[in-house]
Length: 140
Image (cartoon, rainbow, N blue to C red):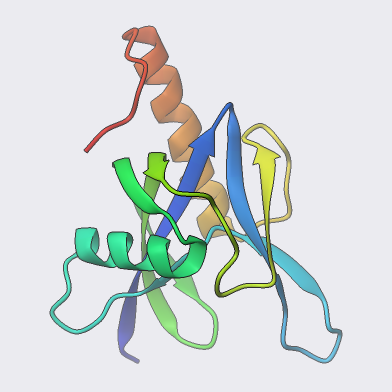
């Protein structure tokens, strides 16, 4: 089974993260919260996918971002998810390719996939390490 690479991005502001709410296309018609992201195109670098997907999904341009972690994920296909924290962007956040986006406290106990939970854990850990070092922003 081929592994498809994706870039996921956590917009972070005022101790809150931006998540998307999508309908699950199964017989129950449930909804799910998840970290937005998209597939890497052939020959594309992670940074290029990040810049393209953030603009396509949310209508903003990332200015400050930092790599968080890689996580395997299997749904309809096997994926390797590359997670990034985006802490500064240009433009107004608008849901472009999903029904709805919502801000949630980074400390919230949300029903997320194991991969998304691991990414938020890496982000909290990074924020704690940076605050101990008295750094005030994430940057790439």
